[in-house]
Image: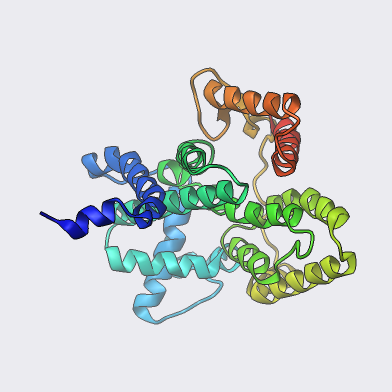
Length: 324
């Protein structure tokens, strides 16, 4: 009755796009409680990020731009917020708010985007590590529902954007240990790091630390060691150029203004804790712990687990041990 549809359902094209369809489906399912209730979620960081997004939206609407002062949000106090905290990304958020016209719609659209972005990135990362399609899809769907990624929709924590972009950084990291001829591709590495710096500086610092062991292993395995150093320098210089507005703002503000210091936090209380049933931003559920344990045991027992698998597992275990 529908020969073209039947042909499409049996084609390789559908097999290629099916993982992305399922990732979008998982994102929608995760959002269903909020869609059914038709209500905005006001989390722990909502007032901060909503105020700076509102300020950017009003600047756009009134064509009254102020890179540093917040003359509309934060009770028109003129506080310096966006100038030091993802100014361009804040304008994108302000533009989205203008288009969707309500905080509920803003949350739905942005949360859907972050779920799809994180899930797609994890799927591509798993495929880059030579995982089978089914395993890559399973990992991506799991990633969408654990750790920091859900924290944007639940509490408007900006670490979630860093979590969504983390797989793309790790794709560059895996390339460093896979490709002995060209461990670093300058433009992809510089672009992803620039985007992260423009969005969330803390995440960029964490990613630099994560990239260091991969770079060192790639340097050891590289056929042309001077070439990898030169590519690193070019990536750093390009990143500095693309993020000049960020570090330029910091240099300008801290050199000429007295800025209030950030609030102090107990790092121990914000580290991961193993919990039997809870699985929040600071709790690691027993299911994830079991999966991590199985992976570690698999690498220890199976000598044919593969070089990339062993390296990622060892580095991941080290970082996991430092935060738990």
